[in-house]
Length: 536
Image (cartoon, rainbow, N blue to C red; front, top):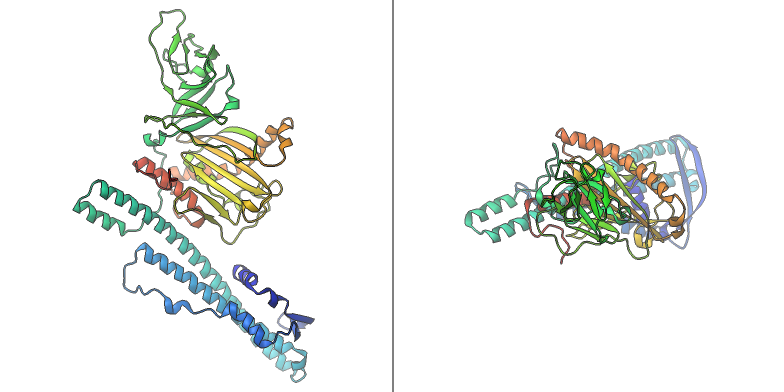
């Protein structure tokens, strides 16, 4: 009776909960009953008044008369969704009738044990009546458990149907755009035939394929500004290629190929000399645009290595690894007003960046995975939902007070309402007095490695920022949380490479992860506009 009984208890009128006075508890009756005998009604509520209060809960119209008539018809996703919603209505009605049965049986028990009624009955008669009622109650409780299982199954079915409809809407939109771009009778017929079929489930299985060139045509954050000081270099891998970051003579960052044109020596093993990287092998020096300006011991040749557009904004270094001309604006990843940045951490993780994004966009796993860190003590809710606009890559979790957003191409931003470290407070971030803001950047280093940039901000306890060595504590905590995830995601990756589909059966709380996968698929197909994009 767990979920259904709790819902009913929360639905009861408050006046009913205080409507009767209890005199004493009868115990020791064979069969394990322990009930309260009602001697009188308070607040002037008689039996008819009590029945009217129960009526608001139990007198619900039987939905079977309104069931969709689909016998013998082929169902499209919309009709199937309507049937799933009917299942929910029927399960709700059935559960209410089961609970009505239990309530009536409990009232009969009270009547049997009523002191006034007992004076006219023998002990044997009472025992017989109680035994019969006990059997009926056991059967009624069993029926409630069956109803609860039906509700759970119906909710899963409804969530699956919603995903099918979302995919159908996206498919309709794509087909409509295709038919407009190249109209023909054969294409139109084919599109109509295709749209009748439900969307196939996501297939993310097998060895990680080389990244599609279209996925490179975005600005990618690759380092924090505080880590790129003068006379220092930061080697990175991005889309299977080695690069090195450094600052030129003007202090602006640059990103060039981490391979010397002369003998292919890694440039990051050298040094920065007057705003140029000097190769440690023969001393060739390169500027931030990749031009070789110095060749000791030989005649200067016109040599240039590959460089990438590189910008600095809001404390982060960004690069554009694609072949298309870069866009003129960069997205903002700053925490909301009132937050202070407390930690900036960079890690190299042995997983493909899409799997890591799947993990970060999923909060339902927290009470099971992060039991030793931030989710220690979290209860497991009966239903977890992610509520989001019809076309968006952001929303909020229910029942957790957490707002979350996927920012293309590889960033996740979240704001968490907290009362104490590791504790949740309220049902939404607006109800919470203090908050933690997080930024996760999952840079695709290679097909099995991700460069993770993590930034943590708080809107409380500003003095923590000035405590010596505090950043080491933050890093230790971040590593603990990530290690809880990594053992699972690495296992996923191994099975995925061997052919398992890591998105085999998405459910309701997977909505944001599913939308990320649909967005990424659309990018690789070259769709325009991209699904779930914010209106410009």
